[in-house]
Structure formats: C-alpha cells, structure tokens
Length: 400
Image 1: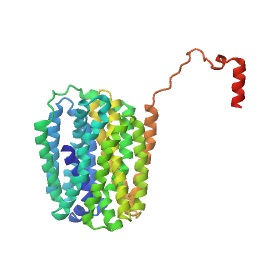
Image 2: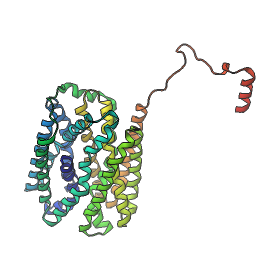
Image 3: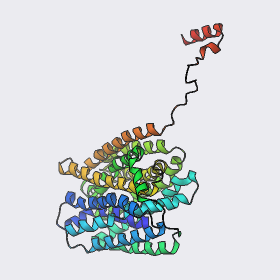
Image 4: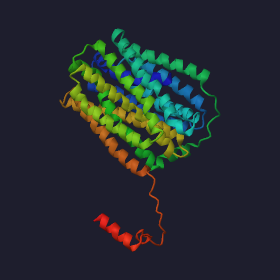
C-alpha cells in the first residue's frame, strides 16, 4: 500500500502535468519543475534519512516516513500557487527513497539469499500496480474533479499505509548501525557505478513518460479520456516486468541488467515512429514500462557491494532513480523547448539508456571473477611437452 501511494503520486504528477500547468497559468516545461522538485526531495532525503534513522527500528521508520509523505501530499493539494506546490512536492519526496529502502531490506531479510531479487520486486509491485490502477484513477479524478483531488487521494492512501504498518509490519529492535559506518558505503567505487547506471540509464523512461499525456493529445490525436488507458498499459508492462525479470536476475544478475538497458533503448528509439498510431504506441509504451524492473536488479546489486552500509545503499538506489526522474524530464523538456517536437523525448531517452549501458559495461567487467592462473607463479608450464613428438607434429599439421 505504501508503494501504491508513492507510485500514484510520482507517476500521476506527470500525467496531470497539462492540467495543473493550465490551472496555475504556466507552460508545461516549467510545470515539469514540480516533478523535478519531488525527485530532488528523494535524492536528498534518501541518504540523509537513512543515516539519521540507522539507530531506529525499521517498523518505526516506516510509520514516520509515511506520515510525512501524507502531509506533503496534503499540502500539494492545498497549494495556493506554483511556488508553494514546488515546496510541497519537495517535502513529499523526502521520505520516498528511505521508505522503499527500509521496505526492501525487510523483505530481503525474510527470504533465502537466492530469492532476494524476487522479494524486492514484490515490494516494488505496489509502485507498478499504481501505474495500472492508481495513476489512471488519479488522472481520471484530475480531469473530472480537479488535479488537487488526486493529491488528496494520495494523502488518504498514505494515512491508510500508516495504519496498516502499525497493525502488520514486523516488530523489530532498534537499529544497531553506526551512522558513520553507513556512510562507509560512499567510499565504494562499485556502489557509485551501480548508482550511476540507475541515475543515467533509467532517465530515458522518465523523459518519455513525463510528456506522454501531451504527446497523446498533440501527436497521436486521442481524446483526453483515453489517456488513463495508455497509462494503465504502461503499468501492466511495469508490473509484469517486476514479476518475471527478477527471476532471471537471481540467476544472472548483471547480464539481466545489461539486457534490460538495451531493450529499453530500442523501445525508446521506436517511440517517435509509433507515436502516430495509437495501437503501435500502446505496444511500445508497454515495452518501455517493462524497463522499470531494473530497479529491483540494481537494488540487489547494491546489497552485494555495500558491505555493512545496507540501509544507506538501499536508500541511495532510489536517490539514483529520482536523479533519473529529474534528469529525464529536464532533457526531454529542453528538446521540446528547442522545437524538436513532443516525440523527441524518445531519442533523448534512448541516448540516456545507452549511456547507462556503457556505465553497465564498466560495472560488469568489474563484477566478473578474475581468471584463475593454474600455472606455478615461478614458471610457465607449457602444454606441448605433454604430447609425443609425432603427436606435436600432427597437431601443427592440423593447425596449418
């Protein structure tokens, strides 16, 4: 339910962008700053809260974080102007990364080692199911009642999460982690490379998704009432991706991440070609949605390389993805502002996914086990003497 509330507000704000931009009398690229403000809150809040909350019980952290999230969304619904909305979105974003980070650690601790990616993927199902149900519902409410009602709905969902966590979240002891030890994760190059993959490679999806509603209206020429259906198609792709892709990641973690990045780049490149046909666009939006599964994969990778700083690493993963959430809309908005058209977000997104893949190559080479040298450290043992002279001769003839 917490993931459902977070996913609804994060993605619904993008789909509602044309509506609150018109209501607040600003253009849409400027309205995109509200999305970036939320992302900035996640980027700054996740590591800060993870370090400060290291000594508190995880159950307590879940309760407090979701309460703050409810307040932030309530203030968004009541914002009298765009400046107030920016501040409220920033406050709403602060608990996001830390909440998911704590929830992922709780889930991973309840399953065997070989099922961690699947468990984290199941935690993320709340977010992806939100893109099927919550975001289309919020978009429909935003059109029928007003965009403020959509954020009010999220605040109610967050309060419901507080109640459910109080009733059902596992009770645990106060944390014993040292905040300084948590900060030790920042010394690891492997942690930073993994975070860079998400911060850059995932930005492509946000570049397209942020302006998808406007692209549907301006390019695909569909009625606004149809927009929730496309948002639901994206959500189905994201949900199925989180259900099935982590199963492969539990067997081959880093190769699965690389394949997802390449697949996303292809789907994003196709976006401008498919935008004119609603059926083709629906298929492509579904494919773009499956790329969300990389979140659970990189979360597992961070658990492997973060050592004792598990809480900070888990939270930083969401900082990385919301860096992508800020970067993608910003670059997509620049392309639109420069006159390249609404579909230019596709090539911009593909470039980000490919750049993420290049960073992945560095991480993959680092993750591979070193080759084992079976020879003596003092001498090289050639294999040729093991062959009789006539056999060596025949071997040379065969090579020739």
